[in-house]
Amino acid sequence: MKSLKRTKDITPILGASFNITINNQQVRAAAGETLLSVLLATDHKRIMNNDHHRHCGAYCGMGVCHCCQVKVNDQFKQRACQTLVQPNMTVETLSNRFCEEGIK
Amino acid sequence: MTTPHPVVIVGAGPSGTAAAAQLGKLGINSVVVEEASKIGGVIYRGPLRDSDDLPHLDDNLKRAMDALRTRYSAQQHHIEFLTQTRVLGPEGQNKLLLNKENTLSSIEYQELILATGCHERSVPFPGWQLPGVMLLGGVQLQIKSGLVKPGTRMALVGTGPLLPLVACQLHKAGVDVAGVYEASQFNKLAKEAIALLNKPKLTLSGLSMMAYLKKHDIPFYYGWGIVQAQGNETLQRMAVAPYNECWQANLKHTKTIDVDAIGVGYGFVSRSQLAMLLGAKHQYSQVCGYVPTLDQWQKSSLENTYIVGDANGLLGADAAIFEGQIAAIHIAQKRNKISPKEAEQLAGKVHRKLERIKRFRCGFDRFSARQFGLLELPKEDTVVCRCEQATRGQIDQAIEQGAKDITSLKMRTRIGMGDCQGKTCTSYAIDRLHHAGFIDNIGTVKPRFPLDPIPFTLLEDTHEAL
Ligand code: FES
Image 1 (cartoon, each protein chain N blue to C red):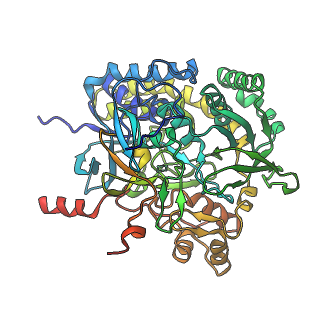
Image 2: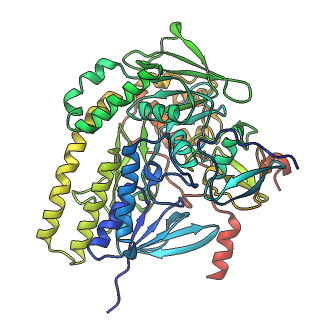
Image 3: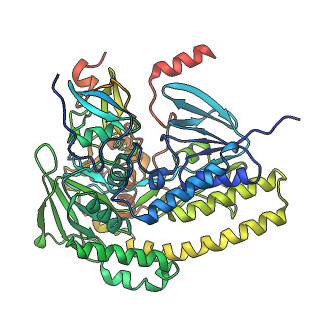
């Protein structure tokens, strides 16, 4: 599996860390941080594909705008800015149930 | 004798934490419900992951974070702290429905303190949906709590004291700060000198931030603001222009700047969704949206519900701490832990400090008062409601066709009907209706239960279980 580089960290990753998978690429994530921070650290700015097929990025960063929703461990519509990383988490950006599966 | 129910506090920012600590000091137990994993709120949460040092944060901030934590830890035995827990809304009488990691539960309270804070006011402009355009507070959370730079070359636009502060933090974090654009004119700030002297220390720290920016050649423009964000898939460039007194952009003098992220901060609105859902009386304020009607003890129109901190107006962290303490003192008196006289004495001191902050703050509010020019930024096809992709053109048309209030605007355009429940588009819609001459009875987007999305299956499961 390819791995992603974190290029935007202000301080080095210390303490407990583990791997998570973003779009089939592995990346190191530190215990306690939000998924949005890992996405931004790896330069993922386009994050969500909304129900109107519009790509957006994190906007409020604090759970209010719902513009950072991604698929986490097979669950759609999880807010990256409100999700803390967990070991072996798998994440898909730009995923949308309506666009992928249609209305069931 | 049954032990009384604890006081439930929603939000562990400065006001909620201060309320819990003050209650503990007076011998009262509380339960604090918080969305995040740590106390402090957006302002004092601090880093979420381990770090040896925080080179980009100044000592004042670190001191304030430590002070809050110390106060909290001293009373920890009186406080139950529910982290990563969201309030979905009221459940029956004196109960709240909670969601933690997709498990529902409810909590009963005798008194409730809402310390839900505020969120940022969105100002739609062409391109504001491009990835890379973030609200200023979101940028700050990433550098303070995430320890991550949201961009390589950034600019800040908006108004108020947060602009220079975040600019300094970004620069210290290693971001190339291309410029800071304050919508109001400098002479307006000069007029507020007397009000600002109510808080000389804060005013001085503001000046030292300006000096820092100057020293590092970071341009700070008064009377300038955003016009447009541009880029293919993500932000690549932004256009700024001089604003006149009414914040109308002079497009003849537009300047484009290459940036890969922007922080946009044109002010805040109180987060009053839960208070509204509970039925507390609110009134509209031009500065901070719908705010609850409160008495001098922070008590709302509901007998046992107090509202503290930015959730009832935007006075910032210090005031939030005092308000949390005032509510706690009143609850202690109601529970006969202290006499009315003691309560008056304790609260008197706090009230006086609060007054000073209010005078200082009024100066800034006048300086940063939002002007109608911002309403002219979005073009006909600019989206105003991100969730439903409703455009300015659709809103204009609905108003032309007779919509005079938020509800009819919502029914015609779908604004406010998406996931965010109108938190992003309502401010624009209200300002737009006001500007069209409708002031009274325009209403607001009514908060809906559940306040935070949960899977349908979860409600089903719980009801079967009950
Ligand atoms: S960025 Fe707004 S909800 Fe996550």
